[in-house]
Image (cartoon, rainbow, N blue to C red; front, side):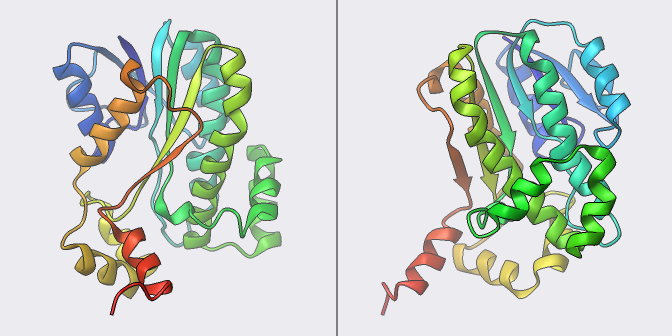
Length: 256
């Protein structure tokens, strides 16, 4: 298979690339940084810049059998605009632009996050973000008083909602889409999440014994990109080692 993979240089994306190459697939990577290995072609792409995204789409040589939208930034103070542009606006632009370069039956996998789990409670704000292009992001941030943590959560809420919204139109095109929602993964940006979410992250990790590993998320992404998952469509697959389950157990008083 020929796979288009964004965010391949580090973290989960690097593990995805390694698994795809080990399985004999061809990988075209789209990232602002050059991946150190495990890709066949790198197209430099700044997902916060609409012109860069458009150029990357034009440079991509399909057809592709899967598109994995993994590029993203963590919650960091002062990066609100860039977070929303990279994690959602740029992802959507790239995904839309790549549809005609996907082969029949191709899979799309979007990397969301457990931080996007509250999308139902924030649906009006999510829909407001989804109505924007990059030019409206700064005014939107000012209007809604969005900080770095909220920018991250909102971006991932929007990825989950976008995945569901795309499902039926893509079925009509013989394409399918799913998202994955990892939580507390041991990558170079884990500290950003500890800083942003504080005691909750530490408590969740303690409850399940450890943070996740990038390869554990990569395994699920690779499966969703493969024909073996062909009847899974429009789903958000949570990969959290049981963190969500123990929280629900507490909420419902299911344990003594």
